[in-house]
Amino acid sequence: MAEAQEKPIDIFISFKSADVELAKTLYAYLRSKGLSVFLSSETLPQLGSSDYRKAIDKALDECRHMIVVSSKVEYLNSSWVEAEWGFYIGEKRAGRKKGNILTVVTDDIEIKDLPASLRYYQVIFYNKENFDQIAAYTGKDYEDPQYKPKPVSFFKSKKILPVVLILIAGAAIWYYINEKNKPFDITVFAEKEKALQLNADYPAFENGLLNLYIGNKEDNRTILANQPVTFQQVPASFLNQKAAVKMNSPYWKLTADSIIISKLPVHLSLIPNGTLATIYGNIKDVQGQPVADCLISVDTDTVINASAAGLFKIILPYHMQKSQYKIVVGKENYQSQRLDYFPGSGNIDIIMKKTK
Image 1 (cartoon, rainbow, N blue to C red):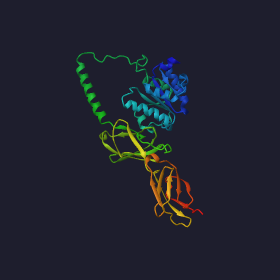
Image 2: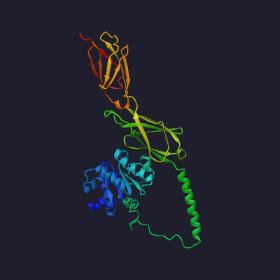
Image 3: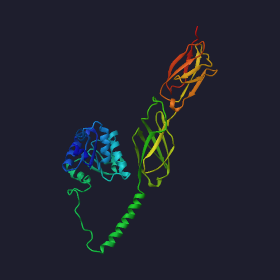
Image 4: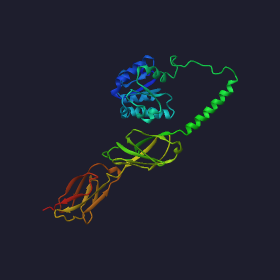
């Protein structure tokens, strides 16, 4: 068991639990070829780790290649599966991964329906006759003789060398020009501003609709907490240019209204959007007449006075904002009123009764 844990991981298999049998069959085949394979349902029990998340993260970080197995398109977009292949592609684009990523799908999935980031790489249909091809793409850096191509002598005479060098130089120039003008993807994260101090009861960021405006084109994605979204096929001409961005989310907003387009991940800072900041209303007696100069306390630590017309309004700072407030209203010769206030509920009417 210790040897299996220390052995470098050749392949990480990502799958939805509903596809576990498909993944296990492929796992067994690749293991039979002498490859080290990580499959959570098989490998984690062998490791004996109680912290499965850490074990999975370690395997993702160390694996050379990734295989994504799926029988339905929606499985590829499930949170954990997308997070795994999204991490691998991000590492590959950053140059920290040199291996291959393969998407292995059943026959009833059409390649055009796959996420664009996966379509960009190799897609193979799940068929046992294709398992040899899958193994060839994920061999041990082609060190295994079974996958290592046979050496071929390209030069029979010295006369061919100048021609070959010219062809290589031309191919290198073509590759440089093609890569420079090749569309690219933008990966975006949304995170709470690090220096922000909030009330423990302020609602956490869960999701939002993120809009990105590049040139005259608007594109939008649903962004989740601690998960990236990708805007695909951005024209190379927009690299390092400014693009407008906005987000619609309950309780949260972006600190900036634009980003610089980059091939590196973009991190957007979030702050409260003010929907929980304002408390306002009016105070009347039982006859409907305004009660002036009442003392109003919010959560016992903020005290304000109502106006002569019985009106009050307060805008709370970030560190006090939350989804519910306790309000106490008092005035001499009147019974105190205690009530809950829910931001967003609008103007609140408070009726004060005189003491006898």
